[in-house]
Length: 77
Image (cartoon, rainbow, N blue to C red):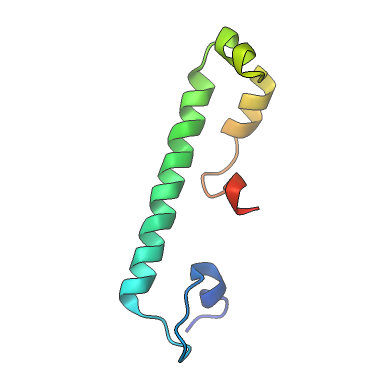
């Protein structure tokens, strides 16, 4: 097993070995979340200034959010 692998995947069995199906399930969830973050950030970047104002957001806020890498999940912090 590669160093840091357990921390990256976040799944470990009682015996310390990872099951392939569990790893794939976790990986699938991560990929789905990353795709959703990318989609949401893209939609935010396309919103009009009027819509952003209604939401209480500035164009600078959206630019900063849109430039975040897809794996940077605000719910994970």
